[in-house]
Structures are given as structure tokens and as C-alpha cells.
Length: 360
Image (cartoon, rainbow, N blue to C red; front, side, top):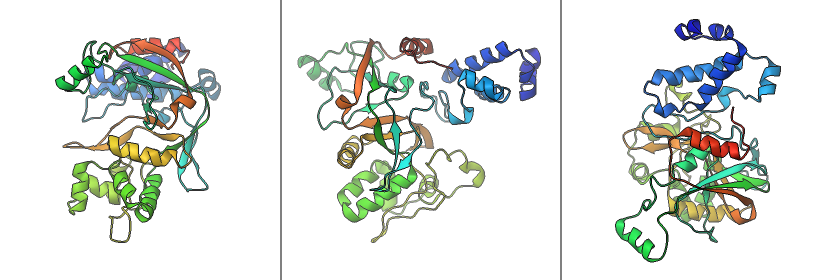
């Protein structure tokens, strides 16, 4: 152990007893990265997972139900942000993507049995024509809970008082856990080819939806810059893919980065992206979701995506999410846990263990 600590490498790791290697691997999974004071520890934890995976036989990997560390990230921490991004609970929650023969859009299938999570601060049922979001990551759902009971979340004092007068309790802060009950067909919102296909289709068939859809990709500031010909490094990369090759690998994740250059909007052609970006806009999301749910999909899904943050540029902080068209028809409510937001990983782990979700 001393030799490995002084000189961590695949070779020194392989000399450790098997049980010690298993223990170190589990520690590397459960460690809360954003609570570490030294960034070097993050590198060490990533290295331990890599060493562990590459010093096992195929049979040992199968018995331990391991996957290649390249396929997942645990509590990813961006170098420009201390934001707590949560804990992965499902290493592979959706099937490989396929393409819809009718509309040419890529989609993923989610099988029955997957757990979804919602951090809910007000007691209200799923309403018609309101398309709720779900987290595949309990840590992400946890971030939506209240810091303490008796408070209103994202409300002014006037709004909070009005809610209390209407009989809405400010003591409500629950982690609600659902299980998917049937196979779901979800549009891949993290696929740049999908975004370009939709932009093109909307441009020629529905200009209002085209303008609406752009607001799900770009912030108001970015749209202003695009419309006024103001370019910067971020937009240059998102539209044209221009970036030194040694830096591109940071953004070459899943199907977010196109192999082709994009192009700006013209009088006769739609905007075309080289990189999939995500922006949060409630009204635009609702309008697009109405179109989506009327065109053969059960909702959409996305991996953790990048958003363009002021002063920071591209930051991968937009969490994994699933939007469902008819949650009442495809979900069972499994458990409601009355709790406030926590940074104690063990609290969240206990919820997972109680559901029978195995953690590596």
C-alpha cells in the first residue's frame, strides 16, 4: 500500500491484495468529490477506477458487474464550478439509440423497471398538458429539495404569502421515487443531428416553432449575438466546430459533437450546429413538448449536457433528465421520502439500498 501511495500506477496497484483493490475501488466510487479540498484527489480517484478495471480478468469483471470507467462519471466536477452535480445511480439507464423511420430522428428506449426521481417542494399532481421532468440521478433530484422546512423555493415573499393563504404548505419537501412500468420511446435531445434535423424541419414548416426551438439551445444573450453578427469563441465552436484538436476531446461526448461544420441561418436555410447545446426555457420547453408528444414520442431524454454560462463559457452542468408526456400512464410511485436537501452521500445511498439498487 505504501508503495502505491508513493507511486500510484497500474503496476503498483496490481501488487495490492485483491480485497484491498476492491476496497479502494469502492472508496473511489463513494467519495464525494466536491467535498475534497485538493483537486489532485479527483485525479487519484479516477486513476484508481482505471487501474482496478484494467487489472481484473474478464471473469472477475463479469462477477463484479463492472463497466468500463470510460462509460460513466461519478459526481463530475467542472474545473470552473464547485456546484454539486449529484450521484449516478444508474450506469446505463437507456438502450442504444435507434432512428425513427418516419421522421429520421434518433431516439432511445427506456425499459420498464428503471427508477426515476423527483425532488418536489409543493404537493400537486401531474396536470394535463404539463410535462414533468424526472432525474435518473438521485443526487440531481436532491438538489431541488428545500434547504429547510417552512421556506418557499424560488418564490418572492409576496408569492410565498399567497401560497400560504391558499392553503399550500411550506413544510412540503419530498423525494419521490417512481418506477417505469412500460417501454418508453424518448427523443435524444443530446444528439446534435437531432437538433439540426428539427431546426431544418421547423424552419421550412413552422417558423414559430423554429424560433421557439432555438430558445431551447441558446440563451437570450447568445441569440442576440447571433442575430447581430457578434461572434465569440463559444458560438464559433457551437456553430462551426472551430477549436484546436487537442481541446475538442473534452466536448466529444456521446453524439453531442458533429463531424461536420455547421452554418449560420440565412434567408433560405436554417441554423446548423456543430455541437449540441442546452438552455433552460420553461415556455419554449412546454411548446416543443406539445409538438413532441403529438408526434409519436413518449418524451425526451438527455445525458449531462453543456450550457453557455456567462464569464465561464461552455460548462457541463445541465443535468441528465427525462421529460415524459403521460407520466400517469407509464410510472408507478414507489416511495415518498420526506427530507430536505442533503450533502451527506450516505443519506442518499440508504434510499438506494432500500430500493434494492446495487452500488458498485
